[in-house]
Image (cartoon, rainbow, N blue to C red; front, top):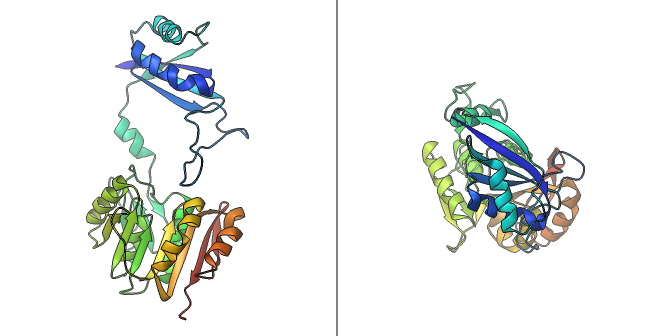
Length: 299
């Protein structure tokens, strides 16, 4: 079985309505991409608390619609254009999409990740490259955190240096739970994680079970209490700004805090914000991202 894809350019205002019209006309799917992706004009879109909601499409958008192999694509494109009152049908390029083993293809894109000689992240369908190492079993999913992003690696490396047997740890903004799970495998005692996204909490619980570790994960709808020896927060800079008092309140006197998800040019501002509670310095950098770390004063 095969399919036909039609790709064409449009603007932000037209992109989403045209996708809807294509689906109404019989397209199997329709997606919007940044037509400038991979160029200096690429415009990543991130939504953070406190920020204006990003646009749903790019100024230069590319739509890719998928049709059945025998579908009258030209007629369906014309129907969609007419439904929106467009003066003409957008110029589109057709391509044949062959049937593939999509699960196998997706899995082939994810190999084991070496964090250090001691620590690896291994998808469940792979054999561990080093059975003697601490192997975190983690599959790509809907929650952020597979170990491939520089900020996750920075936090994992910090945990390797700081986790001591039996210490307590809080993963604030846990995503997939990778940091909390790594801490537990490295020897931490009481391990907890919290996230605003219920899907992330569910994924973290599943990942902890798969790795046979004891860790408690909750969403932020439930009140979070307690102080920890170590607190790590790998989230974006804007929530780190807003959540500074809440995050620092969970670090016990003498305990340590690590923050990531911070671009190098944002580091000084975050350091200044957190200085009210915990003095931070740049612990490490990678690919333009930084990990900030420091200890809460005992008095």
